[in-house]
Image 1 (cartoon, rainbow, N blue to C red):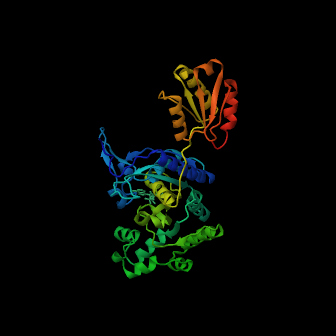
Image 2: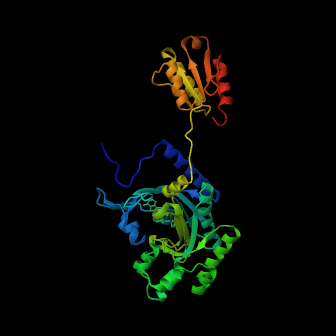
Image 3: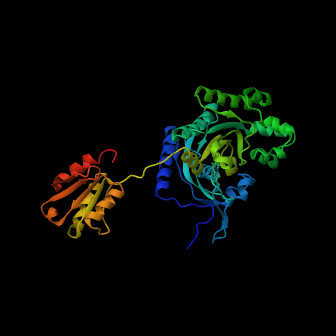
Length: 403
Ligand code: HAM
């Protein structure tokens, strides 16, 4: 027997039903703001991510050489691929461009609950808009995604890496080690001055540390969020693990998830020029799909697997007839299953019951010859014979809703 590769998962039917349910909620939320879905390859030239994404991610990349000697990498995230796509093919499109994606990312990390080597992100990139309302909008999409999913216990934190970096510059400490320690909240590696700075949690604090234009932008975004009733926490200590951020950054956490509680992250960034495109304002975020689902499940999130409405039971002489009938029923968008293991009628009825089918249709040889079928209501146990020509209409109305 083969083991699954470390850090990967298989998903059974129950879990897939939950995943699809959440995916649909998130898609609907993103699309309600006018974002359009795109898709990029699972692997890219490794160089795409080098120096753009920062050391934390580079250490974690799945890099390999293909048979043509090219150095490729499974994507550790999707922002760089989307911006590559933009630079290659979408620069002339009318702005703002509102793009979203749902797909796998791969990071060679030490697996634990909520941290995988293969995981899914649902994210968006907004290209060509740098107003406060543009940034407020992406934050609002992230916030509404959580609200619409039904998640109750989450916390949105908003910071600004330009303000953070200018502060660190002013004290001669703007380097990756310090940024990393701030990102990890490793106070033992930080000076008191830095700890005081990252503890600033008020609008006055933002004004105090400036620079003025950035502080004004930040505060304007917060004003819009305030008016929209979006709850957030100011946190100047958000450093983000990726190097491309230039302004406002934000994260959402689900406190109950413990160490891997960050379920969404993003902000304003610059990548277009690095990929050979004209400079353009960009911002975006990605929701950690798997972690969001974990947080939801802790709060009781479930999804039902839909049972068939009709279970069709032939005897040996009516198999072909039943097969065609089942197809006709399905063509009316009714879920219909047929007994395909040759079970006796009694056992087939038990099976219909155990999978939760609403009705069973029994097609005995003599009945079929007379153009009839027996319909059993699996809830009441009631059974009646009807003309097969009436069966379609009956099933159509019986299976219409909720079944
Ligand atoms: P990120 O913060 O690296 O940002 O990842 C986004 C989310 O993906 C995290 O908040 C987390 O929930 C989830 N995540 C990250 N690593 C793992 C893992 N090993 N297992 C499970 N979930 C994980 C980005 O990737 C940026 N591209 C976001 C962005 C879009 N910024 C601008 N546009």
